[in-house]
Length: 334
Image 1: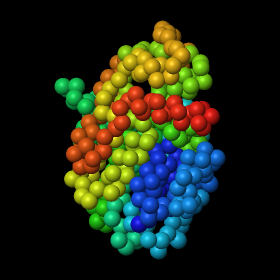
Image 2: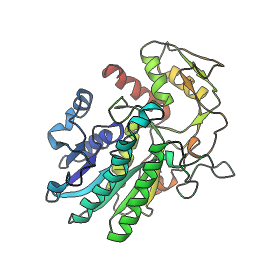
Image 3: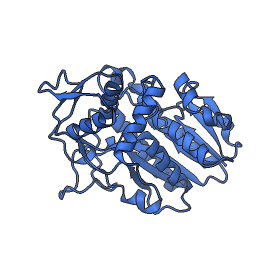
């Protein structure tokens, strides 16, 4: 079976490729990215590289995928995205962000329409499409409702647009669509790339810890739901392989909200000798959050759908953090 992966050398989709091929010695992958694999991706995917066909293609090009119709593709995992952050880079990459996140999705959907025997089309979205509001009783954020991307975040707006286009196209053309929304992802393959510069709290803390630098935290009561990239990869593979699914949308998250202070303590515990401290100055802190944002996209995500429809479970947080620390040491703290 052949899996087509877009964004294949990025943070999430490289983990999808690795787990997909490790779990099935007969599987092969076609990986699409704007450019060829960098040295980090080459090293990470080296154990399975002989079963990957890397293609440097621009998904904004309507004809980029024309030669893939007869490649035996049975599943698609569409994860290519531009995540520019905010500020100057968002402004500089505005057209690229919309082009890849929206029109790239349109072109993947057009390919899906033309494939015979497509069993599943999985579209990767983000928890950034959720707003600040969550269930009034404080329970984890479900997939239905509470969708209100922040108007000052082009990434979130473009990703929700991609969701809506995918959903409507699936209805019009009877496509086997499944979508996922990811909480804050950290772990192996989290690095600066032309399409991603976002560094979550775990990334910052762990880089400091592994290199022996102390770090500071402001607003330590602020919370987040952080999930290891390998666990995300396993979850997506589980959804791709599931004989049947009962929902169109699935959250992928650890499923618990953790404060920045508690996170710092966990990181320090798995990296002996590392230290951190509080600071009242959010402007100079290495890590800071907004303690007023405790629900919605910032709090715990409900993962009951994913747990019900697949055998997937996230690894314990301490194991996930230790794995990330080991990867950073092996890969030179990229």
